[in-house]
Length: 448
Image: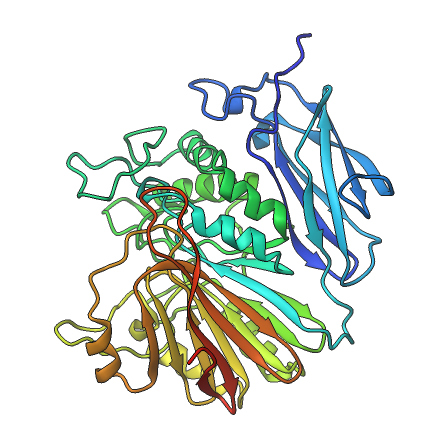
């Protein structure tokens, strides 16, 4: 039986931090994009050893074991590690058939009674062909406690016949749109060969949430918007969600038609992170679906954390546009759903959002919203000054690509908008485009 070539071409990652453990991830793929064999792997199971250590040199290995990488799951590996100390940094690696992976850093969630501050990176919308993931390189260097990815990890599009200038910087693995499991797997593999994306995964644990492009642009529930039947679209969506699981450090494996992404992740007494799926359960004018909405509003009402944090993909605050109607694909298209969510919490609410490829900050009355820009996805032509003048509750706009760096404590919630000036080539520096502190459900600038 021939040994495989170096299989850790897609890097390593960790995620879903609990106070006592995390999920460790990798995928064996000696040839990331292969015409017939996923990852260029043979059709057999492979034993993968994992290790967790106190130090990056692995002088003190605390736990080790083996996992089986199976062909049916594209030889992905998801290891559930428990028995770790709360709020503690660890290092991990994998070995398979004589090959050793890069080393990753992770960190467990704090103890439920902890009042220690938490640092969170927030990202969204990383379209490979639109440019280089330099923002992720800078985020990795920030070494946050956890990274939130709020959707559009990949884009399903093929290459347009005549791409607009600046819209096809890096070639994809295929010129056609992703519709099958094999196509989605290859798209993730293309993205995950990026070294800056690998660095961000190796720097901190991730909590991820898909939006629409992990499946299909602007899909809603079981309505694909292209005339195909709900049953045909469900088959496509299941394939997309399986590929999503195979490439990310998730706790829950898809089963049948069920892929639940909404979940609660507490960070001590400082913050309750409520990760919300604003895409999969839509029905008519209901954004979240009754089961998820009841879960979210119950969590908001019962939370005793200093900050109640909703992490989700879409623009939450109301927006009026100078020359066009409000977006029906954002929460403006579901005002009653938004009103019920806001009514469930008296104050100290923070909404973290993405999707729109620009950076915004808004006041909600009983809380605030911070919208991260895209990592690379091309921003729309937006008249920021006109929008701010027309919407007094919107307090900030920036059109550059980047990410959010959040620091939450028992006394403060602060956000720095980190931005890069270009993505069409490597080497972009990072600057702070704006900074805010939340005070009595209002936004105060910290960088002026």
